[in-house]
Image 1 (cartoon, rainbow, N blue to C red):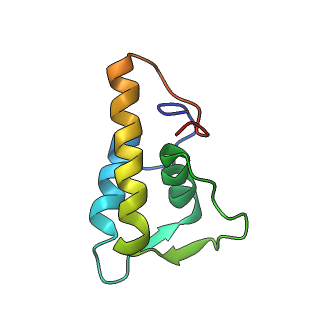
Image 2: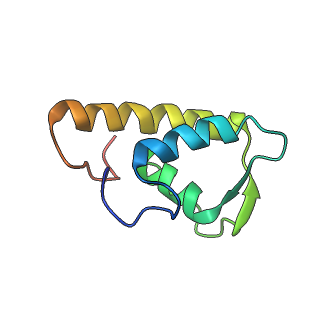
Image 3: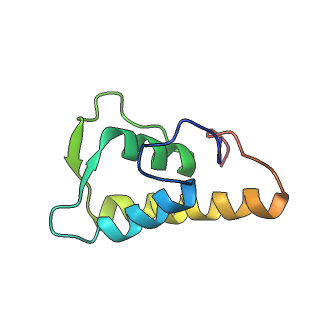
Length: 90
């Protein structure tokens, strides 16, 4: 659900995580923890491979489509006045 807990530590909101992922994926290493990737996938309504490694480099080609989808779903939830949407909803 968008806006639900738990969230990856260090981020005050889902919006903070989305902004972080958008910026960080453009860095040379773009190293993300599995919890960050799992959360952005949940926000985007995409299932995460259960075998995703604990730490991995996730570049723009993979992360930006997730960010765009997560941002759109987040905006829709805010506009609808809901506290969240099921992660499985598109």
